[in-house]
Length: 189
Image 1: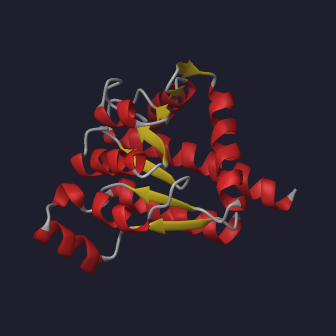
Image 2 (image 1 turned 180 degrees about the vertical axis):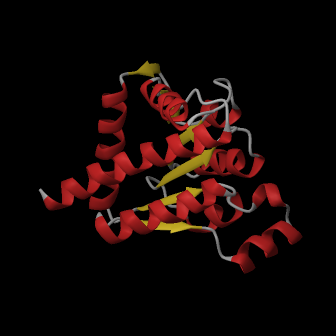
Image 3 (image 1 turned 135 degrees about the vertical axis):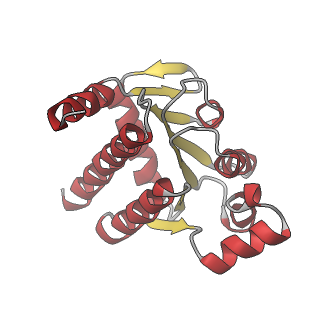
C-alpha cells in the first residue's frame, strides 16, 4: 500500500469513529465531552484513572497515564511493573494481571480505560468486569469487530472500524491524544 493510501485509510477510519454508552450510539463530540467531564470530576475528587492494555496498547496506556499525570494533573496508574505482572500471571493467571491489582486499588468512582485492538483480550475484559464490580467507570477503546467483548463491557466506548492492528493502534493513539489535549487545555484555561 502506498503512503498516501495508508493516510487516506487512517483518515477514513478516524472519521468513522463510533462512540456509544449504555443507552446506545452517541455523537462523537458528545462522547469526548462526557469523557472530559468524567475526568474533571474524578480529578476534583482526587480519584484515579487506571489504564490497561497489552503490547502496543500497554505502551499507549503507560504513555497516556504519564501525559495525564504530568500535564493534566490527574492521578493515574498502570500495571506494567514486571514483578507484579509475572507474580499475578504465575500465581493466579495471565487473564487476571489487571483485575487482581484493580481489586486492591480501585475505589468507587475511579475510572478504568481499557485499550484492546481486538476487544477480546481476556485480561482487559476481566479488568473491565472487575472495575464495574468495584463501582468504577469503564471506558473502552477497541477496533476490528464491532461486537467485541470489551466494547460490550464498557460504559463509554470508542470503537474504530479498523481491520488491521496498524489502523487500530494508530487510531487509538489519535483518540487518546485528543482526550489528553482537551484535558491539558482545561488545565491551562
